[in-house]
Every structure is written in C-alpha cells, then in structure tokens.
Length: 286
Ligand SMILES: [Fe+2]
Ligand SMILES: [Fe+2]
Picture (cartoon, protein in one colour):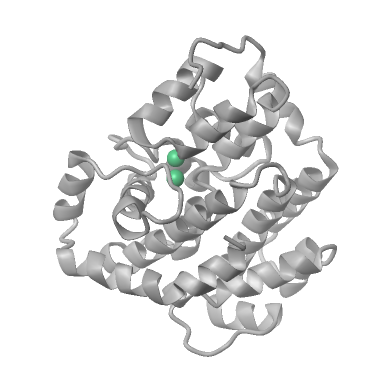
C-alpha cells in the first residue's frame, strides 16, 4: 500500500457535513424522535422504513437470524417487533438505514456489512452468556461498530486511490489502525465517534464503538465495551471467511477467560455461523 501518500484535509469537518445528506437527516430525525418519546410505537419503525422496501426486507432478514434464536419464520415488521421487541427491531432499522446511505460505494462494502452482522450476532450471543446488559444496544453497537470505516471511505473517496481502499479493506487489527492514522490522521473509531455524535446517537452505543479495538479501562459502559471488543476479536476465529478487521490477541484471550467463557462457546457460535453461512451469502450477495 502506498503509505507515503498522506491526505491533509479536514476529515472531521467533512464527516460532520455528512449528516446534511437528506437520507441521513431522516435517520437523525427519527432517532431523536424515538429517543425523546416515552412510548415509542410500531408506527415509528414503519416511518423509518416506509420509504424503502428493500430496507424492510433487510430488517426482516436480519430478524430471522439464527443467532437471535427464533425458530419460526418472521415475515413482517409487525411480527418482528412482537418477537424481537421494539428496541431490537429499531436498532436493525437504524443500522440498515445508515448502511443504505453508503451502499453503492464499493464492491467490498457487502463484505463489511456481513462482518458487521456477524459481530452484532456474536455480541448478542455474548450478552446472553455473560451479561445482563441490554442485548439490543449491544446488537446495534455491533452492527455499527465499523461504520467509521465506511464514513472515512466516503469522505476521502476523491483523494485516495482505489488500490489504497482495497488494501485498507483487507487489513485488520493494529496494522489497520496504524495505516489509518498515517493516511487520515485519525482512526475508524474516531470517525465513528464524530459521525454518530453528530447524528445524536446515545453514549451507550457510541462508547463501545469507539473502543472496539482496545480494552476500555474505565466506566461508564465498560461491560458493553468489553462485549463489542470480544465480539470483534472472535469474528477472527468464528467467521474468518468474511473479510474482517478483528484480530484475536492475548488481550481477547484474557478477557474471554475472565468472563468464564470456554472453548465450547466458540464451537457453539461457529456452528451457528455455519448454519447461517448460505443465508449470509445470499442476503449480502457475496
Ligand atoms: Fe474495527
Ligand atoms: Fe470489525
């Protein structure tokens, strides 16, 4: 990769301007509205996805994930809300709306969506195993954990070569973070923080996303940060066939054992991924 090329431009300002895109302005409006209401309703979900049938079918497909553990077939948003709960369905809708905005950018984008989907599902499974933490907020943090990568590609698309983009997409762990810092003077965690802050996402979602490549040492939101950190690392073991940026390290191993997890937990998750493999490939058109 051409790491000698440095792009001196105001990345942060460009990221802040992204929320002016009409499609993201709609997401922001819906998010604020939903968060400020005591009794959110199924109509709020319908409003988020009404403008886009493809989005509705994506939400339903994710809701049918074997990770989430509902054996029956979910065919409609209303049914998804009933079975999965409002918060989880809203999470899926919001993430899918945001991904849609970046959808046509790069071919490998689908791989990144698939990786995010895997991490979200591992995070939800970990919530069930090790934590009483809210599964839907961990699921949403998992779905959006690498949104900073897409945001960076979006704002630098006219100043970076396609080969550099493809090299970056294939990188993972510390090597990726160093390359981003060299090229953009920021990481995909910082990019996500600026982007999601500006869309008024709550701190409980933003914090785990901004620490997903390192162990968060302090409160608040340490438990959910640990879950997203572990899920990102476990994607390297559980689903290496989907392009990913997670890398299993000694720190992951240590946290894994501290949480009382055992090899069998990895085998269980691998079995689910294998069962889901064809669905993931079809859904994301891999
Ligand atoms: Fe990442
Ligand atoms: Fe990732």
